[in-house]
Image (tube, one colour):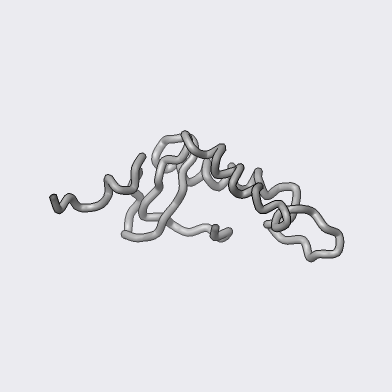
Length: 91
């Protein structure tokens, strides 16, 4: 996951699976736990999950949904429930 902001060309609607995303992030607790012996970063402070939620909310606001995952591919934002809907139909 990139922590810096960028202008996405595709924003995939992930509200239905957002809880699973958080679970999968938290599965790597060693990466996200507070440790006074480590340098504090955005990955290991008490605001990490809040940041993930806010980021998903900000990007999805552009397509008027609740949570979204941004991707960079084209030159404009596109909303999609299924990224495969964006692929050309060759069949």
